[in-house]
View 1 (tube, rainbow, N blue to C red):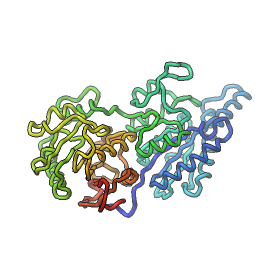
View 2 (cartoon, rainbow, N blue to C red; view 1 turned 30 degrees about the horizontal axis):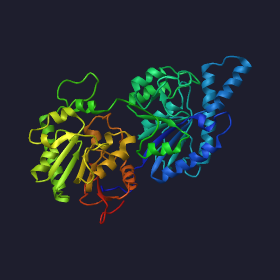
View 3 (cartoon, helix red, strand yellow; view 1 turned 60 degrees about the vertical axis):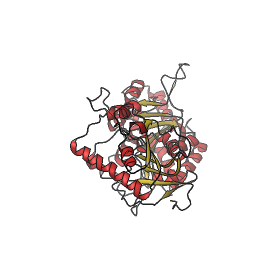
View 4 (cartoon, rainbow, N blue to C red; view 1 turned 135 degrees about the horizontal axis):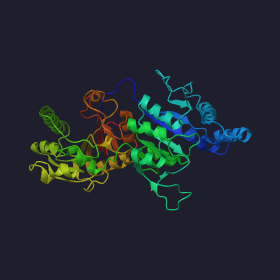
Length: 452
C-alpha cells in the first residue's frame, strides 16, 4: 500500500437530482426521500463526499401554470425564476434532512466558491435564468474535481426517440456528447423536457466530463454505479474508447481523423520508457519473484521482455491489435489479444498478474469485473498500478487524457478492493509515495497479508 497523508482524499460525486423525484405531482415524495437519506449516509460512511443539486419538479410547473392561467403568457425570464425558486424550496428540504452532516450554506450562487469546508455533503439549488440545475451540477464537477456526475431522473436511460411516441425507440447505453447533442439540441427553454440540459451538455463536452443518466428510484442500481459494477443507464462520454482507440494510441503515423491521440516517442522519452520497464521488472523480481506472470494491457510487450530476461515465464494480453503487430520478435510469441474484463486464461494460471495504468481507463461499470478477472487467473498475487488523484506530478508533465474514465482517489480503490472476498491489500515492498505513483498489491486467499 502506498504512503498516506494524515488527511485521506475522498471521492467527490455530484448528484443532479431531478425535481420530479422529490415533488412528482406537486406534493412531496416522502418514500423517495427516506430511501435517499439512507443511500447518502451509507456511501458517506464509505468515505465519499456529495454535492446534491436538486431541480424544481412539478412544483415549478404548477406555479408556471398558475401564472399563465391568470395573465396569459409569461416571459421566459419569469418562467425561469419561478423554476429557480422551486429548486430552492426543494434544496432547503434536502438540506433539512441532512442538517447534521451537510454544509450550512445552500449554494445559490456558483461563483462563490466554498473554501476549506469539512462536511461530507453540500446542497445546491438553481442559480440564474438560462439553464437548469444540470448546468449547475457541471459547474460543481468542474470547480471541485468530482469523479462523477450522476443525473438521477425518473427514466431508466436515454432513448434514440421518445418511447412514449415511438414504439421502436431504442435505449442507449453509451453515447458521445456530439451524438447526444443531436438528440437534445443546443437551445434552452424553461420547462424543457430533456434528459440533460442542452446548455449543460455543451459545457460538459467542453470540459470532457462523463455523465451517467439513471433512474433515481432504483437505489440498488445507483449502488452499482458508485461501486464500479454493471448498471442500467446511459453514459455520456467525450469520446468512444474501445480497441480501435488504443490502436490509434499506439499508431506511429499521422493523427487519425477521429482526433484520437497517436503514439509518438522522442529519443529522450524512449530512454525513460526503457528505464521504467527495467525498474518494474526488477521490482517484481526482488519483491515477489514469481515463476509465472501475466501483464494485462501489455502494449508492445516491453515489460514481458524484461521479465523474461529475469527467468520469469511472462505472458501479456492487449486489446490493441496494432500494438501486438508491432511487438518485438523476441516477445511476440508470448503476447496475445485479450481484454481485462474477459481474460483468456484459466483460473489460477499465474503466480502474479499485473496491470500498469489500465484500470483508470475503464468505465466505472467495468471496474469490479476487471478486478475480479485479474484475481481469478492469479494463484496468489495481483499488482495494479493505478493513476489516482494523489499522483500530483502527472499534471505538470501530461495534458489531460480523455480516455482516463475512472481517475479516483486512493481511498476509493482501497474500498473497492476491501469488498472483494478472499483478497487483502498487502504492504509487501510498498515504499513509493502516492504523490508519484499508486500501487496496490493484492494477495489472494491471504495468510499473512495486512488487510486495509
